[in-house]
Length: 392
Image 1: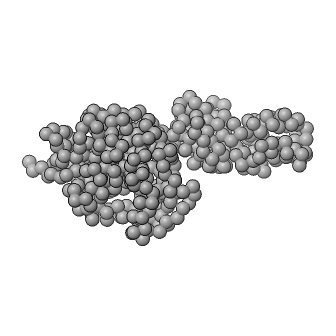
Image 2: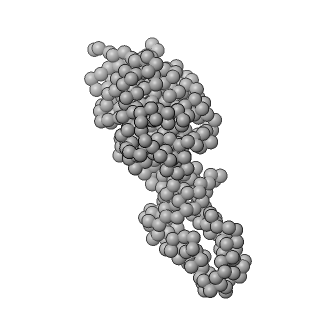
Image 3: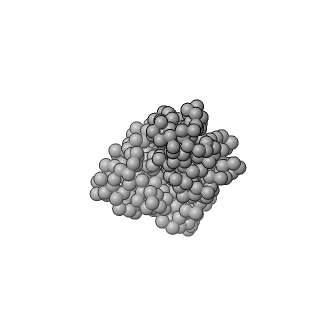
């Protein structure tokens, strides 16, 4: 049996794996990049509605969740959004800022994948797809395995196979199984950036499916002011996806339905339009059907002028902290990313290498570092992949 030898094997040809392989290859390392999918970058291709929200200019350690909130600082500081933007510019890819620092391609996500493949070509990376990696072992300072008919060996192995979110794209928990085999610990994986489901008394809100409105959503100490969307199963939209990463089962979610309104606005509305109903007042800042549903639950019938200031103030307070109790999430099938993963305590924050096994690295979504919605997770993929690529 012939064994092909390389300097490094990168498992997973997603964002982090492509960046890692290209970086190492351009440093003169002989790199083998493997993926069980039939082509590279499949999650990149579907991201951002096909336009790839490839980074966020506001990315910093505070915009990531991890058991160690400081872990991401080193990699993010050494490969910044500006660094990736410079690469995009060098390839002449047009882009725009959609909102809140989110950068999207003007054209197609295919441009980002093509760019990364070109970077791998510059580094002479050997890319192979469409088979399962098998028989991974370690001994005599070498990692060995098989990929179809190819048997390979290398002193370095990079786990870049992501997490189990979006299984229809082929996502699995392979990274965790492999990490455990080599003695690394796992922070319990859970769906993140995922819609929340409602039950019990909150079921009534399912009738509002399709309605979206700007809110401030809170879960624990986290708060995000963006749009919320009512669905046939519960709550979604950017604000909800953001707090879902912080929400834990059994905890409440609170919604401010009037985040832009001045304090005391309902009492002021009474002064200005005493003959208006509460539904009409709410409809001045909310979609009609949502205004009606909330007014019914607040149970203040009749005209505003017939209500005491105290009752209106109490209604406003409830609108600003409307409490939902989600009974779950829509799971990994609808989660954009996975929270948890390979524990950062076992990795070097500078190189992404395992402390207990020299030559073993983990990057991207496989690691317990999860970014906010809006390009942050891609930036972590670029930064962590680059950090490992420089160390290989």
